[in-house]
Image (cartoon, rainbow, N blue to C red; front, top):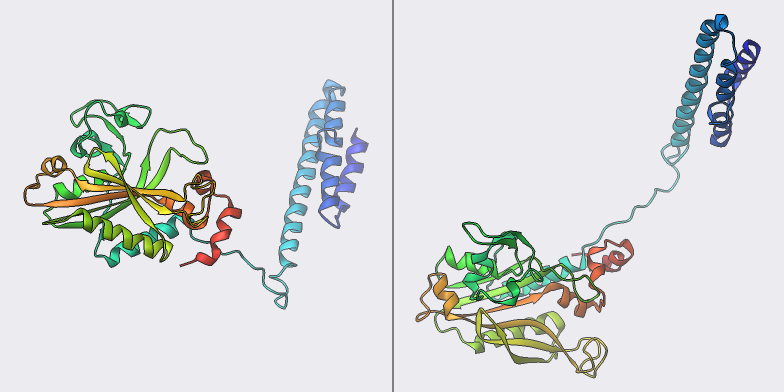
Length: 344
C-alpha cells in the first residue's frame, strides 16, 4: 500500500493537463466514486492495527494532495480560458448583446394615457388592496351583488371595522378615493392592475390591467362621453374605425352602455375574433349614478359626470392581434422580442 501511494504521488506531482478534458480524466481516476483513493481506503481496512495509525496519516495526506492538485489546475485553466478570449486580443470584434424592449401592455398603457392627457385628463393611482366601502359599497353594489361572491373576488380578510378586505376587482375604487378627498371638477384616468378569481385561459386571467376614466363637473352629458370616447378610438386605432354604443348595466352608472368598435382584423367583414359580427366590445361606460356622487359627499343636484373603463389586455389584443392572454405574463423572450421596434 505504501508503494502504491508513493507511485501515485509521483504521478500527481508530474501531471499537467493540456485541457479541461484531461483534467476531468484526472479527477475521475483519483477522486471519482470508483477512483484510486476510494480503492486505497478500502484496502486500508485490511491493514493491521499497528500500522493503521501511520498509514492513516499517509493516506489522508495523499488525498489532500490529490484534491489540492485538482483545484489548483482547475483554477489555472479557468484563468487561461478567460485571458485567451476577446479580453486578451483587442483586435477581435466585440461580443454583441441583446437589448431589451418594452412590454406590449406598457406600450399600450402609455399610448392610452397620452391620448387622454391631450383631453386634459390627469393620472391618478390607488392601492391594490381595498376595503369593502371603496371597492363595492360606495359604488352602489348591493349586498347580494354577484361580484361580492368568492368566485369573483380574492378576499384577504372577512369582516372587520371596514368590512371585507380584498384585492381590488376594478380601478373604480381609485375614483371613490379621489371624489372623497377632493372637490369637483374632476377629470382623471386611473390605470392599474386588478384581480378576479377566474380560471386562467386564452381569454381570461386572474389578474389583468385596466384604465378607467372619470369626468365630473356641472352640466356634463352623455354626449360629452360619446365624443370623448370617439376621439380616443380614432387616435388609438386610426381614423375610419367605427363606433357603436349598446345599452348595458353597471351598478355605478345610469344610464350605462358598452362600446364596440369595428373589428381591427377583418375591418368589419367578420372573422373568428369578432365572432363574425364585425364588432368587438372594448369598454363599458355611462353617467355616474347619483347615489355614487352622494356616497362621496358630492351634490348630485349640482354636478353630473361620466365614467368609463377598459381592459388594457383587450386593447392590446386588438392593436397587435394577440390571441392568447397568457402570453402577457409568461415572460417568453421570443414573444417580447417582437416589440423591439416599438421602443419608445
